[in-house]
Image 1 (cartoon, one colour):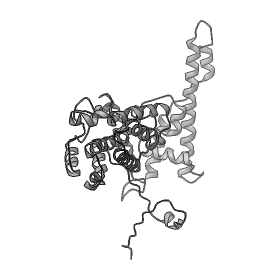
Image 2 (image 1 turned 135 degrees about the vertical axis):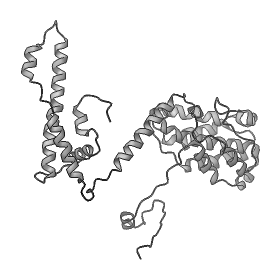
Image 3 (image 1 turned 90 degrees about the vertical axis):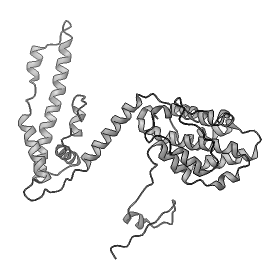
Image 4 (image 1 turned 60 degrees about the vertical axis):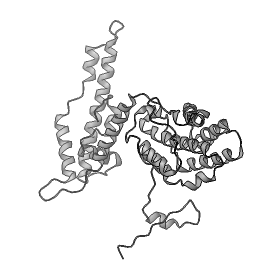
Length: 333
């Protein structure tokens, strides 16, 4: 039956059939976007029985909330780009699970909570094992100290994670109360929740807009047009012809050498000739690639990967990558 579907989940195993992996559709479970959604997901796998296992629930609950908040912060900081992390790390729910089990162990077995040990295990081993940049290692240690400290337990709900005072370990007793408290968080938190300046929102918004536009362009159908419409090849060829007709001629370098000779008194002449040479390289590249691309569309020569990328860029009105490499720096998308 064409309607039959088989869902398989598997941990890495040598005995798993390779043919199933090759013929199947692979799916991944991405972390939720946003601080609130991440916290809700963390508490969706926690039950009240976990709280009952703790011999000191008044200590375990705020510290567990701190670990969950820390997990959401380190994941959501990735949306700020290099401002959040120098390298985007793929933290997983298993990292939080290990921290939760270690927290339960240390709270139950020790009379005084070993905050230094919890910070070391969390920032240096469980999460820090993925961190490779030296500055990021220092950063993740500083972030965890905000949530894994004595003040979070002693001061209870008067202790604040951020300057706004909106984020703190609540005096909740059950998982349902924690979830209800988390639902009160804003859907789009300000950067201060992550320990960042509010101007970081500008960079984040620009990146999101760029990804959105890139995604919209990548969804453009490159197939044939409808009845009476132009096919993708026709559109690409028409764009190539239009650019060819408007291309300026390269600068005559011999004339440039005559008009702008290299002199000690005229240092800018050297710069002018360098810019002319760079400009000519771009024009020569455009002339040759457009000519080859039109031949490839007609089947006269082989359509290489670079020429195919050129055609896709022409179809969606983007700068081709091969032209960007030889051209001057530009902010044009």
